[in-house]
Length: 215
Image 1 (tube, rainbow, N blue to C red):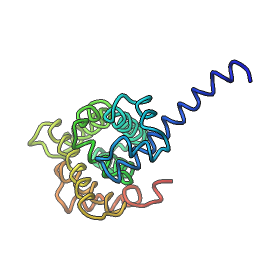
Image 2: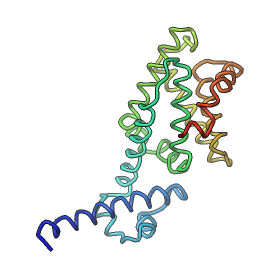
Image 3: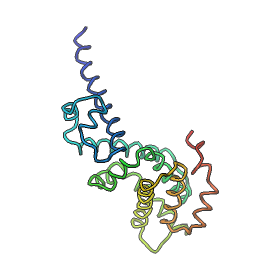
Image 4: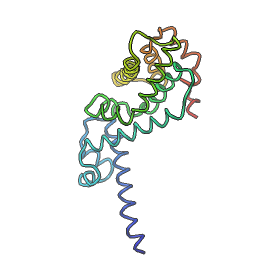
């Protein structure tokens, strides 16, 4: 074994352990958002000491997990744009929902907990900027409410998505139902009437609801 091989192996093991801890935390915290570090370590097949070798605290582990998730969502949203700001907001809602659908409990604990501002201002900052731009364009075109300032409407659109997340924890909800609700709620916050929002959903069902849109 060469010296280079000896120095690379520990780094490779450390990277694998860190990834295992993040994967374990994602699974464990989605089952129980209050789960301890010990439970996460056991899920990863590692010791409690190993966890603290990578993360200074439980909060630091959750923060990194949230930041990785936010970056993944932001990248997915950035890859898909539509010139119609109303449809674009609906697409953003659908993409965000699809990313969090399998980790709803953990996501809710983050966006409703002490890490909320950190995640929203940094990791999800680009998505907020996108929604603000869409709201402004829609207002100019007469397809969004103009009785409130753009930032407030953008926050209402985001809040509608969080409300759907809350509802999905309260009762079982399929991926398609979540897509439908997050689109309708977001467009309602934008200022569309329920019939108008439903018309958008039906007109663009292939992009907003169908599984084929994933491929």
